[in-house]
Amino acid sequence: MNDMAADVREQADTTGGKLGMWLFIFSEIMFFGMLFLLYAVYRTRHAAAFHAAAQNMDTAIGTLNTAILLTSSLFMALSVHATQEGRKRLTEIFLSITIVLGISFLVIKSFEWLAHFHHGLYPGSVVLSRLGKGEIMFFGLYYVMTGLHGVHVFIGVAVLTIMLVLIHTGKIDKTKFAALENAGLYWHLVDIIWIFLFPLFYLIK
Amino acid sequence: MTQETRQTAPADYGTYLIVWLVLMILLAATVVLAKIDPLHLAVVTSMSIAALKVLLVLLFFMHLKYEKGYYGLMVFIPLVILAIFISLTFSDTYLR
Image 1 (tube, rainbow over the protein chains, first blue to last red):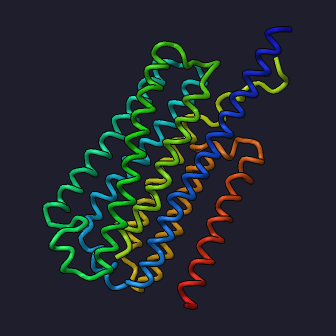
Image 2 (image 1 turned 90 degrees about the vertical axis):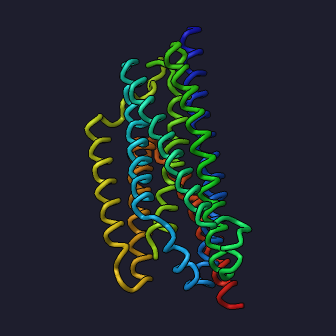
């Protein structure tokens, strides 16, 4: 009888936890949604300038990073699946691959930023101030949006690393995997945001 | 035990792999199709493919396809709110 009560409570907790995670995701959608709106409004106002500024973006690097993030999402989903099947070793391998791919994304992104800095394309730079308002706006939005996204990837990597430790110590297993599932939802959200960032900054030019 | 314990393993490894393959094909498609000539057509194509990719991630990787119906409704509501924000803002900037 006590077992049953505990089981019901556990069930309610995991459902509540997942609902809470989704609510957090909605707040993130609103947060990034407003930035996308800002981008859309300025793009219609400075169409030519956005077009010109986008020529500075390297489509190949953007495509590579998109592929990396999509693949990391696959391994995240696989690792949740492996936990549900109770395959601890496999879960750890899949989750480690997810983390490595997340770090790779950040490393590539920072080299990309450094290349922009090298060309003098950063907020408040002399090169940028000689260009028009539209170009300044494009790079402003680029740094804010990819920067905030990068922060999310960084937090995601940290959270997934904690999950890896919890799996290793047996705190997350076949019977209790809600934390890993919710961390996975967050990681997929980060992927979703990038799926929209990629065409806006790298493709449309 | 409750009549409805945690559902285990909604999809299998193969399903996830196929979804990933489709995502990769869509990525290749969006890179190629971005070079379409009238710019507005390229914008529409890129954003449609992005929406399709996001739908796949939501349904399969985020398990919306396997969750109870109200999760889908929950996701729908903020998207409607966002659409209202966007349309109101654009009606303002266009008509000003």
